[in-house]
Image 1 (spheres, one colour):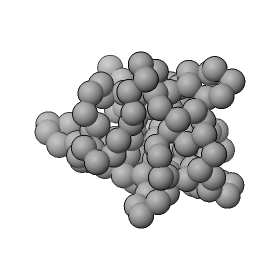
Image 2: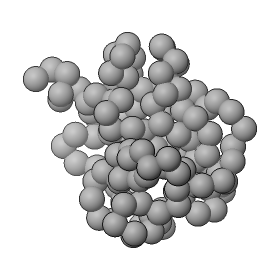
Image 3: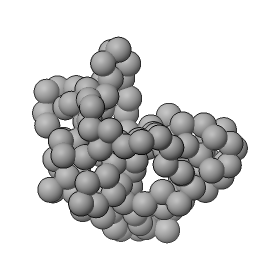
Length: 129
C-alpha cells in the first residue's frame, strides 16, 4: 500500500474520533454474505472527507472507512509496515469471517483499527432501503 492518500494529504489518526449521532446503532455488513462486520459506533471519523481514498503501488484506488473494531473481520498474514498508508502502523489483511472475502486491512501499532473498503461493506441503511 502506498503511503499517503490521493491528493497528497497525509492520513493522521491523531484527529480521528469515534462516530456519534443518530446512526450510532447502525450496522455494517459484508456485501457478499451479509454477515455483520462492524458498527457505526466504532467508526473513526478523520478530519476531512468521511471516506479516505488511497492508491496501492500498482495504482489501484481504494476508498476506505476506518473502524476501531471489526468483529466480523479476521486478521490474516504477518503485519508489515511496507507501503503502509498510516505511518507507524503495520498492516495485514482483514477478511470476512463469514465468506473469506477481503474487507480491507487491519492496522496495528500502539493501538489497532480496521480500514474497510467502501465497496465491500454495506450499511443497514443501504440494505433496508
